[in-house]
Image (cartoon, rainbow, N blue to C red):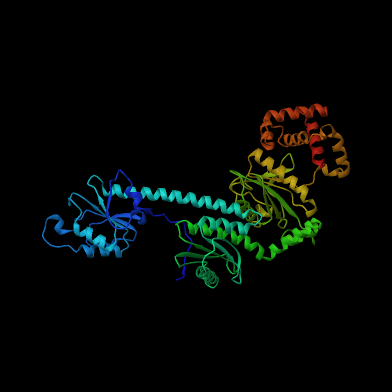
Length: 540
C-alpha cells in the first residue's frame, strides 16, 4: 500500500534486546519469548497498572514489580495473566521486564505461560538491579546507536558529494546510493522511463512496483512515497516540483538513517537533472561547445546570461574563494555559486572560482576605500568583514549592487567588472585580491576600478618602461611576485609570507635579492611607488 512520507531528521535507532542482556552490570535474564537478537527496543517504561495499554506508545520494554497482581502479594483471588499480556502485545510492547523482590520471590508461573503463549519476551530483573538502572542502560545504548547512525549518514553524505563531482555524476551518485543501501537505485525521466540505474537487479514484481511508485509521486502533491512489495522496501523521491524526474530506491531492509541518505542523493540528483532540464543549462552547454570549437569569449558570453552592458557586451566579476576551514568540495562550491547568483563555478585544488554577472551600476559612492595594490576592502559601517548581509543589490551582491558580497565561512577576492575579452586579466586580479584578503584576515577584498595618475601614461609606453625597469628580475617570476605582494602589503614580512604561503625568511631573502638586482633602495617611498606602477603595468 502506497503511503506518503515526510522527510525528517533521522530518528533515534532502536537497540537490540540482546545488547541489553549482554550488560553484566544489570544481570538480566530472558525467561521466554523469541530470541533476543530479533527483538528491538525503542525505550523503557515502568508501570504497575493492571492495564498498561493506555500508557504505551509501542516498542517499549515495560518494567513492573507485579504490585498489581493480588495473589502474588499473598492475598486470595485470581489474576488474568493472559489478558494482561494480551493488552501489552496489543499496545505494541516489545518486551516485559519483571522485577524479583520486594513483592515477588520468583516470576509467577502464570505470567511465564502467558508470555510464551503470546510470543512476548519476558526478562527477569534481579533484586540488585533497579528499574532506573535498566532505563538508563537502554538510553545509553540508544545514544551509542544514534552516534553510530550519524557517523554512517555523514560518511554517506561525503561519498555522495564526491560521486556528484565525478565526470559521470548521475551514474556515480546512483552507484554510491545503491551500495550504501545494499539495494537498487533508479533515475526515472519525465515519461517514466529508466534513465540510469545501479545496484542489484530486483525481480519483475518489485521493478514494476517501483516504477508505479515513481509515477505516483509525479501525480500527487507529496514529493516522497514508500511501499513494501515482496519483502522489499520501496521509496520514491520527486526531484523538484513539476520537472518529472524521480529517484526510486528498492532495498531488502531499511535502517533508520536510510531515508536521510536517500534524501541527500535526491537533492544532488535534483541539482544535476535541473541543470540539463533548464534552458539556461542548455545555453551554457552551447557556450562551452562553441568555446571548444574556437569561438571568442565575447561571442559566447551572451549565452551565459545576466550581466550589464551595451548590446552584446556583458561585464562580469571573477571571484576567487577559499573556505575558512577545510578544503572546498563540489557541494559547498555549488552552494557558494548559488549564494553569489551564478552557476558558473570551478572548484579546483583549494580555490573555488566563480564567474558572476555584474549587476546594473549604482549611482553614488561604493562605501569602499582603495588599498595599495588596487584592491579595496569594505569600510567600517559599509559592510562588516564577516557578518554583513548581502545588501540591497542582487542576490550575493554587496551594498547598492557594488558586486559580490562577503559570504559566511569564505574568504573572497573579487576582480573589477570586465568584458569577456578581459576575463584572464580579471582572473589574475581576483587571485591577487584573495591573497591580500587572506594576508589581512579580511572576509572580502575587491580589485579597484578607478582612474588614477597611472592612467595618464599610454598603456604601451607604460608597459615598455615597466619591462625595462624590471628586466633584472624578469627572469625569476618568484621575485616579481614577491615584490608585488610585499609592496601591496606595505612592506609587511609576515603578511606577505601568509599571502604567498612561504616562510617570512624566504620573503626577506627575495626582497633583498630584488633590491640588489634592481640597484634600488626599497626603503625610499618614491622608489617603491615607481616599482609599484611598473608592476601594475607588467602583464607578461
